[in-house]
Image 1 (cartoon, rainbow, N blue to C red):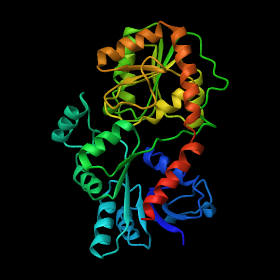
Image 2 (cartoon, helix red, strand yellow; image 1 turned 180 degrees about the vertical axis):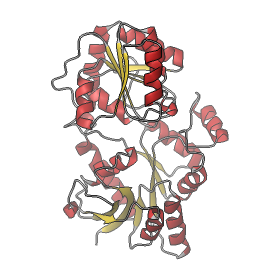
Image 3 (cartoon, rainbow, N blue to C red; image 1 turned 180 degrees about the horizontal axis):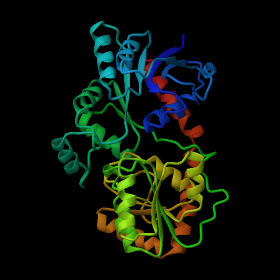
Image 4 (cartoon, one colour; image 1 turned 30 degrees about the vertical axis):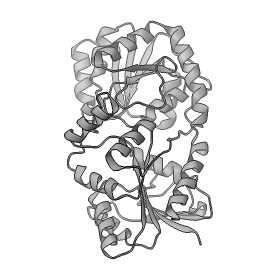
Length: 364
């Protein structure tokens, strides 16, 4: 009989949450008859259930977490990719109390820890690290989830080290993939002049305000940040007040449009301090862009002086950005090396690794 796996993640095509997008990319490619997958949906999905995934319909009403907790009581052998909501924890605890054991396979996609744990992790890895901001209320649930999980899959070698330090040896590493039919360097044509792009939610934790300093320092380059958020209006207003005609926050784009913009740009800058394995960096690299980012989270897809530059302070990030603005030949070489590296990141290559490993764990 096929092993039954519950994946409490939304498969709706309208959902843009990063973790849900990863789960959708995986499940849409799973086809091994040794497993049946159950996920969540409230709207239409982009793939048929014939591949072994059956999205279960629940509402998006204010009671959806209660519905989620009840779905956890369904018949299955394992839970893969549980979320951080109270409905996830309540569902798992209720199932445990009723004596229906199931393997719990969690993913670790960033450091979510208390200030004391962050300090201990920093001492352990030998450099400063940062916890994902805005997670304080859910921290007890997340800590309990990882502690109770039978296995944790980290999405970078660095996060695997951190997870083992915090939760023991029940940790493995598997990479994330990209949609290479969308994010690729074919037809890449950098616009005249240097164009620096950023991408992500326009909120303080992503540090988009750094683009004000960059645009003011390097007025010979154009700066664009794609994404939406609470700081979009204030940052556009501040750019206008400072007379920064070389800086824009135009809002979000579809993946297809974003890939086109990447292929027309010169480099990507990610100024945030807390990330896991930033997918936007993978996607930009695949489109032939060098990347400048911070080293605190040891991104596995940006190698210093190979396909980008890694900074360890805001001042160094500014200096690295300036170095690439003023060196188009270095940008081109880094971009070519990165695009070649990205050939190994296609979800079609990565998803089978996840499928085989999760089935193995779920079959215990």
